[in-house]
Length: 103
Image 1 (tube, rainbow, N blue to C red):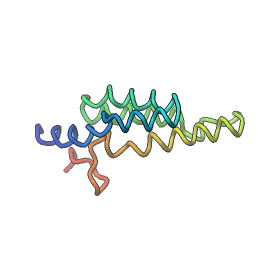
Image 2: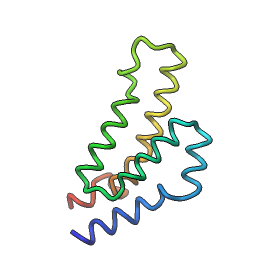
Image 3: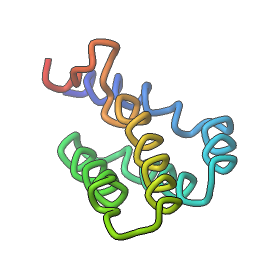
């Protein structure tokens, strides 16, 4: 179990790089806020990280943006895609896409 947490933590370190924050800030305040939430959740057990990720994705999911302007829907979709792009790093998934904690 300790080895699994170590591997996940090593992968998640990319979320803490200066480049990751600079990229998020360049994309927008919402992306930077999402990255900060993910950074705070890195130390949680896998299920806690999954719940946090699901909550963030749910907030920005395109289906939740009905009734908003086309610009707001497009922006929400961009944020959703950004968060989705951080999924494997945050959950500690390797190239196979499966969580090492399940292996």
